[in-house]
Length: 255
Image: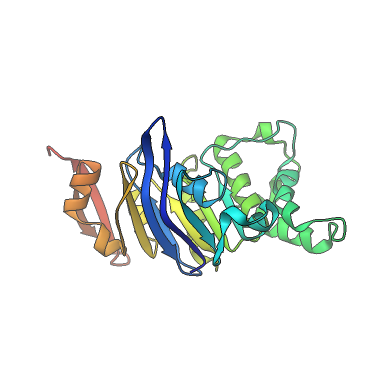
């Protein structure tokens, strides 16, 4: 397993935000992370990324304890895209993406033409090829989010953690980013609010009140019972005639 956690938990003021979560991911697997607001999704991602130290349990990256790894080594293997984009005001888009190459640079290994190519490709992957000279503060929220995704791609990580990456994007770029993630050989955990988008993943992990409620394939997870008990909604399952994919239409639980 390339990434795993064992009985992972985090508490604040004696309140469990994440409690006894254990899961493992295979190389190349795409795991959708879903749950109501406040269920602990962001906290779990931060612990898996090594940004937040767990109160209990452990995280392993490629079989090694994450807590004992150097930050540089973690950054060469794992990248996190935060929910809220933020960076220095006057930085250019290309410079922001170039920061993704930092873990690979050293006194013995300076910037190269290969790094330029990786940055150029990352910008193209998120449909920002013509934005390199634009300044960060001139971008829309959705464009800023795509820059952060490009920076993570420029790290060339083995594992990509994304906290609601489509939150600020228009529908075209939501679809293109999710399709890109699906094509990558990278292992990915994607926290999502859109449950139909989550069904595109290989497996889905459901958090509720900080606990792992369920994990399995989309067909195993997306049931009327789970939608009602976890999200408080009724789900009607329909078939898209264009490709025979199952889609969910939601109603309030009192519908």
